[in-house]
Image (cartoon, rainbow, N blue to C red):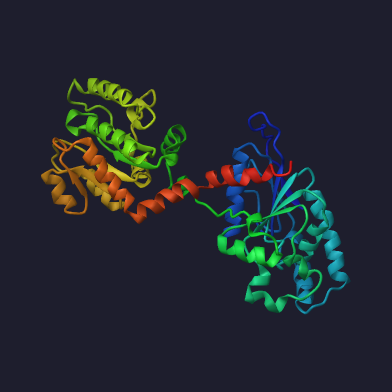
Length: 424
């Protein structure tokens, strides 16, 4: 048995947190949906201060804050496992199976020592290593969360490998001291019928997405999200411009205030640029904008990146690319422009554009952007245009739903962690 031990982790919020084990046939850095889920769960829980131990039959250390125990008898490819599976697939349970169960049970007791909760992937419901399933069934602790990604008994591909009686029936019965969890409503329905337990007793915890990793965020973008909680916003409008009067940023503040009022949502504005370098009055314009932001009650909704840190933060090109991908819309209320490169940048990432009706913008935007009159349209009308666009756009609804409900950090914090506190 090989293992690595992480440095000590401090208790989260002053509370002694339980040690969490995560068990599967294989673990990261192996490729697969379960392995990916394990990696995100382990990292997310460790970030919250939980001591985490990953136990599997194949894998290696993948995070310095996650303890890892690897033994081939916990997997599905060891020669002893394969020999026993060959017998089981023919309906034979011999002394070889019993001996293997005994050996795995001893290894499991050692591997799970000190763990209060064990997240178990598929071993309750799949027949890849029935000796491991049987050994796990013998244990009286720790408390188990059976993560049922796949079900052998409901999948025709496995019907020829299953038999009536022990140990196959372990895969179709509800175990004591176990909370069953699955990954979709369809799996929830299958599992409830298989185990003959109420469907409401089986929480659905979907896989998620690590936005920062998927979009290859820069350290600056990660800092901005951590400081401003940008992913928690309902709508993000990006205004990539220097702080000069012709950029008409005061209108943007009035529009975002009205959009928040009309929608009842947490709509935000990100202004990326510094004061313009050629006009001595431009730094004073930033002071005016900050005063207007305060007067409109937008301190937590309108973010001027230049004013965020000391020294001032000026995002580099990769960070700007991240912000375009993160935002829900480009808002560009300039009073005059020679061209307007941000419209092209928004177009290449598929970002909706709300901009002034200026001839240069017409040249590049055609009828594929939402225009408004920056001098005569009231903020109420412009906000209504933006609200109507988002209300009737399935792409934006999906993006918002993923951002709010399918992020790994949200799933772990709001859905997984509460399972550890059940029946404490």
